[in-house]
Image (tube, rainbow over the protein chains, first blue to last red):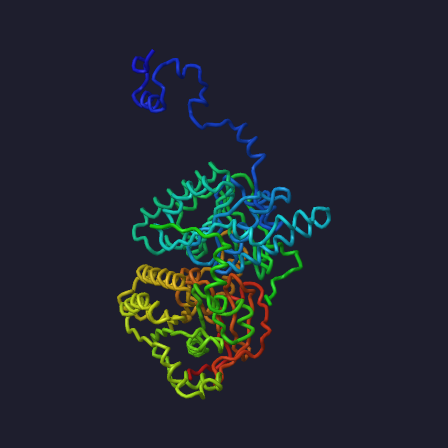
Length: 312
Length: 307
């Protein structure tokens, strides 16, 4: 029996036709979830979540409040005042994602989209070196030192960070559109970091409504990438001031609408003389704070004794 | 639109191969150069911020000389463009610094003329003139082997413009200039140094987030002290955009140069003084400044004279 003869409303009929069903028998045996293409039951999602990957930040306290680290398949926004360590965290994650699976990492590659020119290769080199050193220290306790030394090399880590330098918001939109093709070709990309997502959107837009639309389209594309390729998306954001109840407070830039776009939000701030990270938004974890420090080796816990000293 | 992706590894190899002196302009202040992994980096925007008379122009004069020096003396052997918006550039002082810092070079015949001839001074009197000069600079960058761009100071132009009364349009203009300077520095791989003024912390200065309840209560109590707190004049946007921020401040009877924001340096402060040879560090061992104090700008206890 053809669809035309069945008592469907015009919109339902149109949807069935566009999904490719023209006869009753082609879909009469399907379950509701199969008809709604791409739907999953909550149980399926729970099983998937149990195997969800996390990328460590190299700071145990920070990993703790994040449930193990930065989650894949989600967009995490990281914001803070200038100099607090957003770029440092970005570079640390770009290195940590490459930790081989046998040492607790994802063994993946990183894409670093730099809109401000803050990515300094010398610093990435330093952080990569220290990351390898930390792995070697752990491995020394077992017998695999030789194998480990062969496989881990700073140059290999740097070679797996794909760097895009973006100079306008149009380039930013273009690169996000291009990433799907790039990641399909590259394979194994497990993290995309945009540093920062704000820079070009803060000055060139007169029409704020347009800016909101463009940004939410961008966020949706990133979300699609995150889910399709099972990777983590980290967006670094700047701060601005907002007037609430007569007093001025700090808040992340790009406005109220943007603040809905990300799955998780971490705010980096100064607490006295210590750097802290506050988990400001998360669908499953309690909002909490953790201290961290920026050392010569990269992001580390505060308890660690290697405070950042001048480099010689 | 061509989208280029680089592996971070090839970036590093390019820098090592192509940049003079490994991609940094040494300032000849050993402690500072060590902290900055070699000196003022190429391809990045470096800001010098501090109260009036603290020594920003002196630092800029020295940097322009260093760019002009031949490579055998640790310079970049090229031209420096000095955009002077406050008419602070003083050639006699430049020659004095040169003679006292590099006596062995400057006594060679004709050297002073050659090196001073490599420093091009522009004096735009309005924001539009400044914008035009920037665009012309872009064109002549390759032809004249420009190795350094100095803007002293950025804030003066933006605060002088009467028509830019609204904060929004000022921010837009600043935003355009920020992007332009960054792209200029990156595509020609030169250091760009910009000086910034300071202003008093205004009542709309925010220092805490909504979730930091206890900090807010404390700041209400501390509000009487805010008059002595200085902040950079160009605002948050600018502070985010610069890659390296060097703060010059005065307290406890001394002047300090602090590395306040830098992806590659620890937060260090170096005491310095202004002498006949420009800026000299009192010690090459910086004082590590923990916490947000690295970002404060103080001007206490010094009578600052503009030389």
